Structure formats: C-alpha cells, structure tokens
Length: 233
Image (cartoon, rainbow, N blue to C red):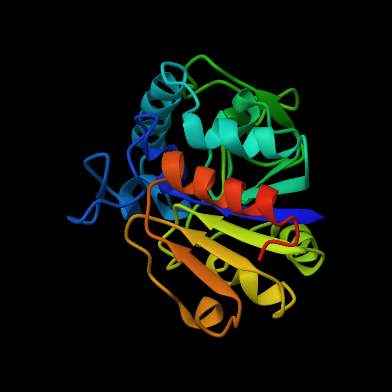
C-alpha cells in the first residue's frame, strides 16, 4: 500500500520554522521578490546569502515535531514516499527514508554555473565561496521564476499512489499545488491543515477527507484511520 505525502510549510511550523508567507506578505521580514528570485540574486547576492544563512542557522537549532515522527513511523506498516515543498531536512531527521525536495534543500549549496555541482553546507555561505570549477556558490533552492527540476519525478510518484496525504500546505503555490491531480481519482485523499483551502484539483476528488488540525495531531488521526483500515477508508 503506497502512501504519497505532500507536505508544505505548516508541516514544520510546529518545529518553530516560520511559515512561508505571513498575512502581511513578508517572509521573515523580507519581500519575497528581494530574496527568493533570480533577479534578487543578480541585484544583491549578499542580501540573498545573508537571508539563507540566517535560515540555515535557524534550521540547525530546531528539531522534528510529532508530525514528522509520525510520518516516519508509518514506514513500518506502509510504503511511504514524501514530496515536500519545504527546504528543511526535518523529515529526514525524524527518520523518513524517501523524501523528494521540490524546492531544494537549505543544507546544500550548488554552483551558480554548473547546476550538477551540489555540496552539503552547514556553515555560512559568502561571496567568494566557489565550486571546484571556480564558479560562485549559491543556495540549493528553487527560486520563484525558476523551473522545478524534480516535478516530473514527483508527478510519477503521485500517479502510483494508493493513498494521497496532504499536510500543512495552502495549495496555492503551483506547480506543487497541482500534484494531486496526477494521482488516481478513486483513491482516498486526506488533507490535514488547521485552515484548509480546497483548490481546483482537490475539490474534484470524490474520496476526500479534510482534517482541520495541525500536523502534530492531524497526522495521528490519519494514521489511526489507516491502521484500522489499511485501504484508507
């Protein structure tokens, strides 16, 4: 029984990581256009590096929450694959073994020119830090306006799902928000979010169950249902 899980910022909010967008449209007190676009990198790379250095430092100070641990625990009974919009590594640190990062990874950096040169990184990244071929290193993050290299693989995962679980995402950021549209329509869908927003793709699913709870409790609710009825009903 394959469970495909799509997670968003709400998944990590209970670990203390600020959600992607606040109501005021700022991301940790920055306009997204100033820190998360190729244009921002070209205009002020020092600001972009400082922003991601701060986020990396924060990530190293937080821990997976109960929701992350419960998803990892599901692997003992089910075939679980996680597609995450998050750039943190809290799923992996909780014990999940198959995690696809749609939007990159905060604890990695890559060459600005040679995208296949990717390196682990926990300390600050600065102007002048270069790859083995002499090109400036940048955050290993998919910025707004850039293609999403892992999207095809994520769509393939969704197509093979027997159960689709969505956790902590507003379902407003595409193309990730459309991934459930690749899954078979007849399978069970669970949507865990304290403020669920049903988008076009999810609204058309006949077997949708909405659990208006945060990840730390909502995933437990889903896990209990799945263990009671492995078919997910």
